[in-house]
Image 1 (cartoon, rainbow, N blue to C red):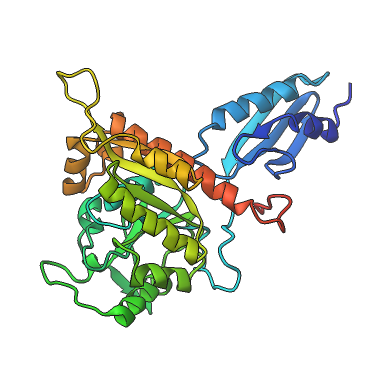
Image 2: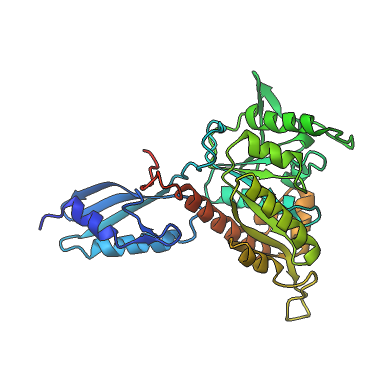
Length: 359
């Protein structure tokens, strides 16, 4: 019995991406279908290597194709290509950078940099090409958290970012080393942000994670003005003191036209080895309630732990140093949900009825 390519594609239309809510054929995920004497093979190209349902989609694809009369063997090659973020059309993007993700909090002390570092590394662990830009000029902690403090090299007129744990990163802390304070006014901050975006040789990146300074000031506005930001992640702790400032950050991003991908609740609870129930030191459920209030996604909660703090101090993020810990798994799950939201946002434009991943 002769098997036609159209039969294979029609069968695969029964497989739907749970985040994009469309079948994988119309999304352009099925490539290079070949049929040889009952053996069917094809490439299945996901929108992110961090896809949390990769195995489920592969299993469904195999099942529906295997059910076609005459099919004796099914070979599926799973791949991923992250789509280009929509951004804002009139702004020039960074060459090679497909999505820019701002990690912000509205206030200090909630572990925003810790979240940014671990999310960047967790995304890289899935196979994505990831960069991390530290724009917290007055408190640049990313070099310590990444375990690299050496000055970056310069090639021609480009700064070569440092790399650690599979992530390229840049920070003023690599240039202004030691205990010397950074003293700058707004226009100077704008220039620094622009230089780190334009004059750093980022190369090809699926995601550039930007660790923002606390507040809703000059750096946030500069980022919004200079490049098309795909979206923002807001970091909070459960208590009202933190939530009130994060609300301001949400409204700031809304005013400058940057969508919020979701909210991460850090330091959600503490577990004591001798106490069976979680201890909610800073209150409970604040992040989830805020996500509901603003009709955005609650990306997840991260427990308070010594391992996270030690990882930040030692330059070995918890997703690297303790990959099987509850905290690392929380970061990994949040990274997967974030990657899904980036893909959803990239597909939201009405001008893009089908996903064009190229290749």
